[in-house]
Length: 175
Image (tube, rainbow, N blue to C red; front, side, top):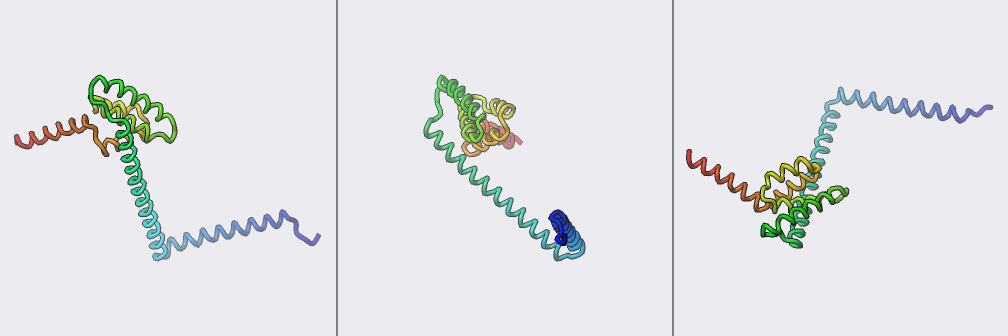
């Protein structure tokens, strides 16, 4: 019985690894507290990582913007918005119901947002429907609808914004 048992070898190996990990933690803590260059390098790496994350977020945002713009233009080219009041009501109901169906399917958020956008574009009171969208739609789909509205504002929204800007201009000239 001169050879040690396998469980003792595993036990001593575990103790050695734990001691090495504890030693590293103590060393790291000591360096962090007492070495200004070490602290500077940690802060530099932290800032660099934050900057990289910010750049990646901006790239993703730009990519999403381009995808939204492309899909919206394709959708509007494939099926233009109706112009008469008789066509607008059934079109609105169709777009909203299709958007609701697509919104329930994971991965179809952009398509659902486009349908909700098209419903918004033909609805006579865009502020009212936006309020309803905000209360009923999932936040990510509502956010996409708002981005689509920023990319290409519907005429009804532009008319409202134009009226409010015109009233602000009128107030400025009165003063």
